[in-house]
Image (cartoon, rainbow, N blue to C red; front, side, top):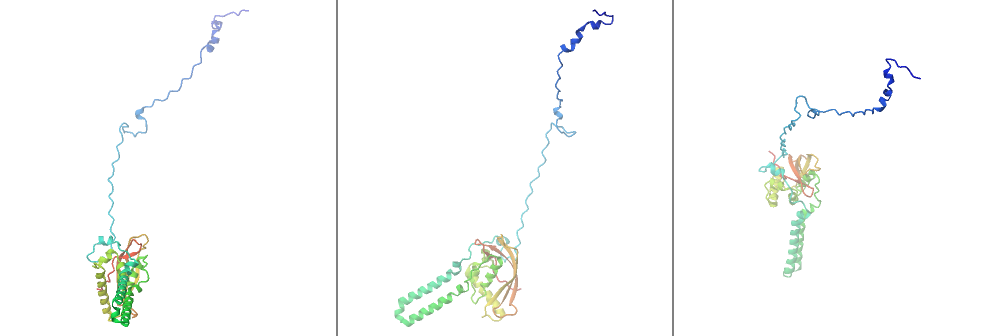
Length: 288
């Protein structure tokens, strides 16, 4: 059966339009293009700056000069001694038992050996009684010479500055002071602070000073006793040098009552290689 075609049905007669979409290939989705970025303006530039120019390095500050450390003020610096010398005080010769007793033991040995040799060579000329008398006198002399050993049997343990000062003046509080112990308890600076060139000069100066103090008390035969009180200083742990102040009182031993004199003394001490403390000044002051 044929379908009549009208004048407006010409498009229906062509059936190819039914297959147009099937024959055409599907259009591929084009990949999204990356946005074009202007490299000249890439980054976070500051408005008004030229990004092509490198930033200038900040001006370098000149190094800050370290302030020189102030030297510690050393009180009571002896006349003729500079602060630098006191600040660099050191201990070269430390206290030892042989250093204290050695000269005394050698003298005692010399006297004993000389006595034995003399009696052996000449004892026959004097007889037994005279020889025995010579030996007895020599023995008494040796005992008298042992006096410095008898008063220094206790070791001077100076783990603190206060102990060092007390041991120093305790050696002076005897009929015959232990001058050699006092000398060994001084640092190199302490031995020069009073103008002492050697031990003999130190002993002579201390004897004169003791005689002056004894005459001021009116009785020069009694021994003097020295007392250290009111010691003040910072903690000495970890320190090599230290400043200290203390009161020194002198009186006649056994007299009681008021002391002959007293002084407020400011001094310095230094720790030696044996970890003990030594005085940088051991001079007994004079009252003004």
